[in-house]
Length: 257
Ligand code: CAA
Image 1 (tube, helix red, strand yellow):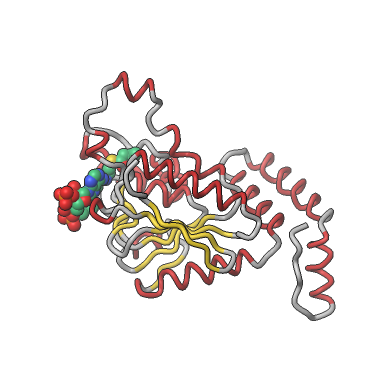
Image 2: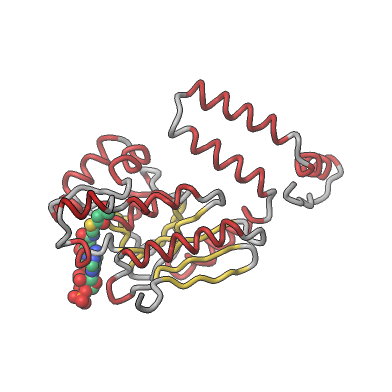
């Protein structure tokens, strides 16, 4: 393997993964996916970390799958290696993941941002699923997650034309949670991550699972899952502590149990 394609660091209780292939605008090659998945697993397993940020550079979150690596693949190769099988690993991570997006989030870059729990975007962020212009379709979850995120009409228009969406439109459609000035992107993402990481981790994991259930189950099943989940949280010391602290007008001290 050549030089590493990501940079990892820990600030407070937040694990930060920065995609780092600046010459290729963070195009996602096999090595990067392997290294990113390993870093996600490491942070997920680290009890000192309560939230993860995935980010890129000021110019590009990621400009999509690496076209140079992909262009000569044959049908036999993509089916035998099950090309893109490892792109969904991010959704197996239990801790919250914030995508801090500046610049281009295109193709697979847009798909990874969508696979995170929510997106905080800089004012220069641009989103697109331009795969049809290359003779393919989105393959990292874009057809499914974009339709769920912004609805059929907008998703169809984006995917069938490959056009780029600016951040104002992305915010209006609910694709991004918040837009911030470029120079404040990491500070805002970190402040949000630290807020989450200071809460009870089993409670946060339960909340993430319950929201995700909304996209995978019929309503009645999702509501039943939510009710079972809140019942289970009454077994935690952190539930007793959170409510006692409210009544006693003090800050809770969560112990993640
Ligand atoms: N793969 C490989 N290399 C890429 C790349 C990609 N997706 N995107 C950019 N690069 C490379 C360029 O080839 C260029 O390399 P060289 O300097 O060696 O020529 C370098 O990054 C800088 O790019 P540009 O010179 O093109 O920069 P620009 O500012 O003029 O344009 C851009 C920026 C609009 C993002 C343009 O690079 C672009 O359109 N990139 C491709 C975007 C795209 O089509 N993404 C979808 C990929 S397919 C996919 O993701 C499939 C899937 O669903 C899994």
